[in-house]
Length: 499
Ligand SMILES: *Cc1c(COP(=O)(O)O)cnc(C)c1O
Image 1 (cartoon, rainbow, N blue to C red):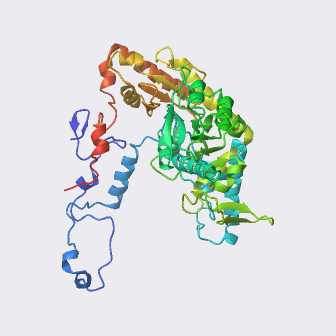
Image 2: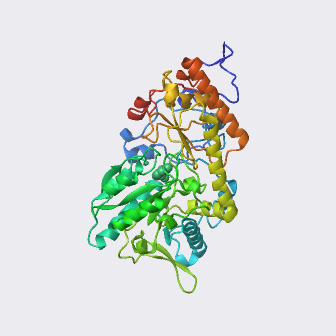
Image 3: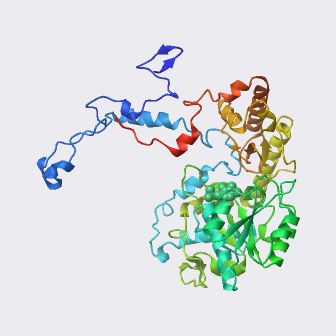
């Protein structure tokens, strides 16, 4: 039953509403969104061709609505989404930054949006050049020697990179057994290692939240193929001993993989090759403003040092001496193909548009603003929220709910209450090495006014948790549904409407 100020309403509704019937519950018999011309073939033909048992005369509960009703129904539903274009989306480790509209304009240009991946190379030299330019920019930003744009996600870039490490070491005669992964790593890291046929060896972080060098010395040996490191790590802290770490790994014949999903903290400032990284991936759908979320197309290019180039996925994009581009499939050492064609072309177009529009100065400022914003959030909240690792923040900051937990309020409760204040929740309960983590990544897109509003919201929630924890524990109040059974929603989703 829908109410506005206590009055039941049937015929009128606010334009923005958080209530909406299912489309099956709307409409009335006989309504239709289209006017079909009269049937001009014998009606019997289809049923006799298929057999009457296969031809439905009725679909039970089929919604019957006008075109306008359908448009309004779905448009209203679309207003329930919270997106980057609605407000601050400070999900840590996800880099939910603004996707400039110019990227979309460029990606939709005739000849870019409409070219076919099977078109002959001679007809798509422009598209191939865009791919080559994107790869060149990413090589320059990371300092690396070669890039493949083929992987379609960060996790797939990881898998590709670890497979390359395996192929390279196997050719040296010993692929080895283990890959070291710090306990702060993103969950995709151990998964990629395992799928690549390696066994994960966890290494503990020290009290500063960084790789513990003495633990690394103990663990690194000739059975270890390499270290998979996120830098800055998932606590948003830069591994200041990265050179010692890479020297140690290399001295035992291992390779250093960097999870570059956190490049938002480094672009224009530090190049991973210079601190010893051999292979890494980037997330174009994070750092390079290609759309992100909802399972849409992603892009997780891999970047490598020259000695790993032969192992990059096939085909490789190459330039001939006459300046034309072609895809080279004759790559005997390649780990093979990881994705159809040459990856998600549209993502490369958007990332290149973003990179060129910013230029080196703009990219550097972007990084500086992202780091400044997270440090601002940190300094304005650390009197109310526990900060387990108080090292200088890079692009994100991780608090814990330790103080609020004494009142029974956990990170998930604070996140849900934040929705009532108009913000998308931060990342809850990750990284796992912080119990009750609140992981906040404001990105460079947030203005000071917006950050102040966000900070005031979290300060207000901290006061509520102290004075009236029930308010926080029952939040959110402003959404269509409030507390869902999250386990049942994930394990027993009801995806089908039945009459
Ligand atoms: C997002 C992320 C990944 C995985 O990227 P996907 O594109 O989601 O597969 C890996 N590592 C870190 C640190 C990330 O933040």
